[in-house]
Image (cartoon, rainbow, N blue to C red; front, side):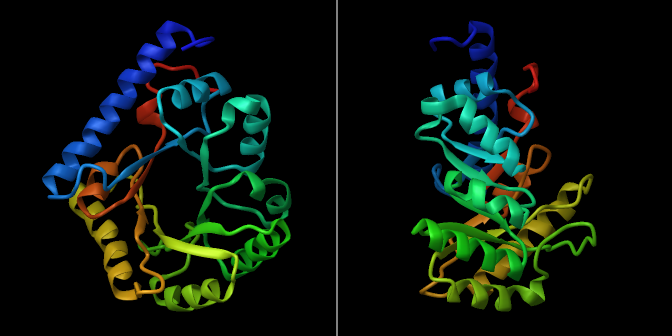
Length: 239
């Protein structure tokens, strides 16, 4: 890969292969197709050179939690970022939407009715259709954002009235440090909500759940997107 140190390329390739292998084994264990869960590489703690390496290795789905970081990284990468599919996975402040929504492929963290309205307004101005995931606080932790399970029907109703928003599915985060069985209960809770609320018009095909410490449990419970950062970057410089 031109311009990327061989040591960085080798380590990044090995880490990607390891994570993808773990995803594949979890899919196999759950009886799912090998292509039914996708990796979103979280880039919040790495530099532009590492992102170049990801793109060169075919990892095009990238996740950023801070809109301002996304804006800077896309500017630094320039034409090299073409082809990347950026997922906004963290808190999306409404004041940041105007400058950054045009860079985003999917907003995974649609966590409030106010944010849904703001996304719709800006997408209307940009004359675009925006993929979103509704963030659900399945675990009920007060410090986590997201609609409660009881609020989900109303959230879907609001989103479906926004003609520029395309609800692709649901997203959640599990509490840190839970035993495997408890993690799986959180993730199966999101899957059950999807099964309950999906319709022909809005099938909610995507389930984004699982991070570096728990993505295998998430895949076992039906995740179609896993958001992995630190497991991809072991031994690499942070940016």
